Length: 246
Image (cartoon, rainbow, N blue to C red; front, side, top):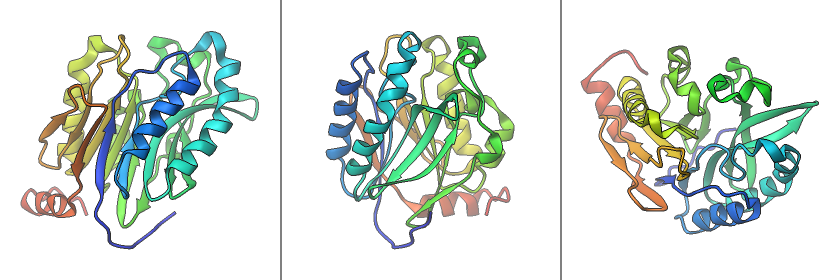
């Protein structure tokens, strides 16, 4: 779906802990969305509403439909990006979803499951050919879900994006990897990267926004990190260091 009017946008990376209380997680998310300015592009961490609560997978998948309707309503005049676990066609998928102006305008299943964490035992793997741009107000947005960040062929699919969103549940013992990969992704694609990882103890607790010049701003203890989107920064970097990105 494409919209084309020219407006100013704020980039927002959320940072909160996901508990076993799904409704409380949803309320946390909705409150953070509500407090963002109109035309914000908001990224929450992977499976922000439920976590990987494998022992209660039926409850996890049952929660999806009502949560989706609530997020649609919260996305009026905003864009929200996160992943939600859903059951579909007899299988369970970890779907990246983009909500915009009261609608869900894009979804695709996680294409690279984290086998070190046993994800393949619970999820059906998506198709990497479904990785595509979402265009909102002329801004091209790509999404890589957590472990997908490690695959160079998926970086190529993001070439030409103005923003790459990274919803993640990234292990804290590999914190440096998350920092380096997100910064490098911004540099090689000369675009903004909005990364959001959970505040849970096992995760990096890092949410960050990286500029097209590779400058990184971290959330610290803020529930939401925000910076203004500037299309000129992308154009200047691509003109100054021409590596063939259109």
